[in-house]
Amino acid sequence: MHEVSIAQALIELIRRHLPAHHRLVRATVRIGPMHGVVSEAMQLAWSIVSAEAGWPGVTLVIHDEPWRLRCVACGRCWEPETVDEPCTCGCTRVEIMGGDEFQLDSIEVDAAIPHVNQKIRGTAAAAR
Ligand SMILES: [Zn+2]
Image (cartoon, rainbow, N blue to C red; front, side, top):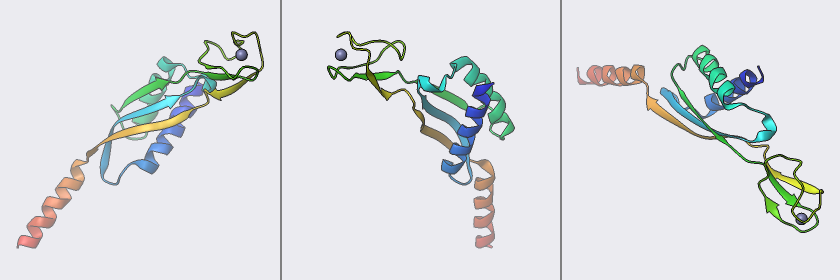
């Protein structure tokens, strides 16, 4: 399944952004149609891969980005259903302006409990 490798790439990307001693709660991504991702398959892949990565129960929010085309002849920009849709002026020469997005939009984190415990122990030791 193609979505599994995308989910794995996403985990690697999130690891680089996740603050130390924090637990991931939710991740939001933008994915363009160029990646051919099926949302249901992506959710399934995410639930497996994120659990393997030690992040069970993390919500993945997927924003499907549209194709964005620009007509070479008249300069019109629009969001077509399919990437090979011709312009309303009849021109079939178009530039792809968007649809290849694969972007981590945001992550939501919680302070992890082990870190809190460490802090409490540290304070107790200092008070002695
Ligand atoms: Zn046109």
